[in-house]
Every structure is written in structure tokens, then in C-alpha cells.
Length: 314
Image: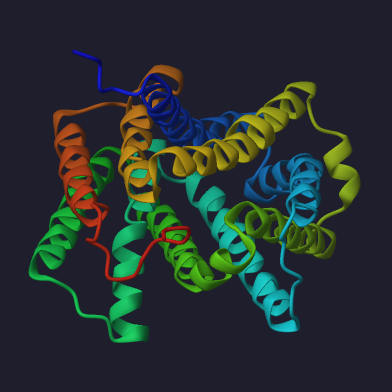
């Protein structure tokens, strides 16, 4: 009796699982590095500027490679205009709001709020595209928001009113990124996800540099502590470029639905990393709320569950 399991397929599947898990953890860990950079005297705009400038060469190289792949489509004027909008929404505005919010909220709460992205994409589908939503999806959304409310209330009790402002900023960041996802679906199918990400990151870098030049002296970025540059390089490479490439490689091996489900590792890992590296408290209510959110979002990211497909899904 021959073994019916294809060793190559099994190895490919396991590699995909490892890449998806690593991508989720690394992308979540940007919040940890941001907190360390804040301790070096930087603020949200400084962190954002260093991150984008140091990641730019990697994304330029990625965009060049994807552009010169066989069969790559030329960009129309409409495509270029949409890339400009997506770059501002998805990687400039969303990231800036996120880093700004991180100055006021613990990393575990930040990641949970961002993890609500599928619910925002779903709501955008209802409001903008008239999509119908199944009852279980409404229930899953209600469960997810109940979980975030639990974690928020626990943090509010421990940390005070500044948490309201920070949470609102992170919520706006999540909404901005959800809008990016909802608008990017057709463009992803035409030009590919990696090419779109590379181009959007270049647009975001230009927007960030313009913002910085309007409000700051660029010489400030050359006068930071040495440790800040090391942390910024780690943020750019380990928590920005690698998670994108790892996640796309995982999608190619597993499919978008399975890769999306594995993103639950991100909030869980950050809850414990925040406690270990930053000394943030971990309470029973936080654990319960995190579990409730993960359960609700898991329902929404199951195959066929989303009324508005996440960008990159076929």
C-alpha cells in the first residue's frame, strides 16, 4: 500500500504555515519597536519617517522586479491615480495614525483594534456596495466588538483617560486600512499584490517625507541616538518588508483564506511580547477579551464568509 501523501505538497504546506505565522508575528512586533523608539525620544512622525525611508530601497527593488516580470501589465492613468490614493490611505495615513495612537495605548490593545479590519471591510461592503451580510457575520462582528470593549475597559481602568484618544487614533488607522483593502481588490488582480504594495509604499514614503519637511527640520533625523537607528532598521526590514513578502509567499502556498486565519497569531503574540518586553500587565479580562475577538474574526475570515473579499483573494 503506497503512501498517498505527496511529500512535496506537505513540505509546501508546512512552509506556508511557517511563513504566515512569522509574517503575523513580525508585523505585529512593529508596535514593540515603536514603543522602544518612543523611549529614545522619538515621536510618531519620527518613527514613521525613519521606517519609510529605510524600507524604501527594498520596496523600490521589489517594484522593479515585479514590473519586469514576464506578462506584467502596463499601468493606465486610472491605475496610477488609484495607486496614489491607496498609498496615502493604506501606508501613510493608516501608519501615521497607528504610530500616533501607540503613544497612548498598550500594544495588546492596538493590535486587537487593528485586527478588526475584516469587520470594517464587511461594513464598507454594506454601506458602499450594498452587499448582503449573513446573520452569523453580524453575530461575529458583535462578538468581536464585545471582546475589544472588554480589553478596552480593563485598560481604561488601569491607565486613564488618555487611552480614549489613543484608541480613537488606532480605530481611525484600522478604518483607513480597511478602505485601502476594499478599494484595492480589482487593482491587485490586474497588477499583482506585491507590485501594488511596492508602488503604494513608494507613494507613502513620498507623502511622509513631504509631511516631515512641512513641519520639521530634516536635520533632526540625523541627530538621533545610535540605538534609534538600529531599532529603525529592524522596524523597516523585520517588521515592514519581510512580513509583506512572507505573507504573500504564504498566500501562494496556502491560499488567502488560510493565511488570513493564521493572522490570529499576531494579537496573541503581542499580548505576551508586550508583557515580557515592555512590562505591560496581562490580566484575565484581557485574555478573555482577546479570545473573544479572535473567535469573532475567525468566523469572518473563514472561506466564503466575507461579503467583501480581502484584497488578494481569488
